[in-house]
Length: 100
Image 1: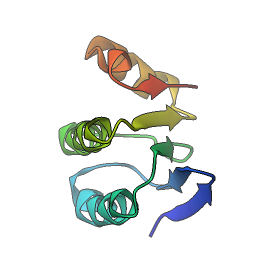
Image 2 (image 1 turned 30 degrees about the horizontal axis):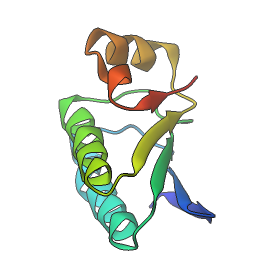
Image 3 (image 1 turned 120 degrees about the vertical axis):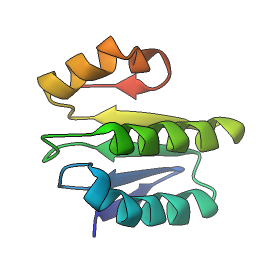
Image 4 (image 1 turned 90 degrees about the vertical axis):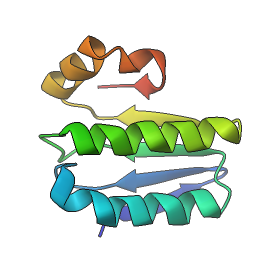
């Protein structure tokens, strides 16, 4: 279970574990619950996330798309250098904010 905190109109979620296929179902349920509450923005604090696989990337893209439909944004914080490099290679920084 991730730590979730609400600040004004943004929600910060801290998975605290790798975002891989075995964890995505639980994370997806948490994201859906957050989005259903009408958050104007979602911040994923990736401290503690050392690895992300294609299923995890798909989850982030789906969250971005769902938020974009509501004129809301996805932001990733505390992204490791390796994961930032992967996101740059995939050009994902053009779709959502990625900060170290």
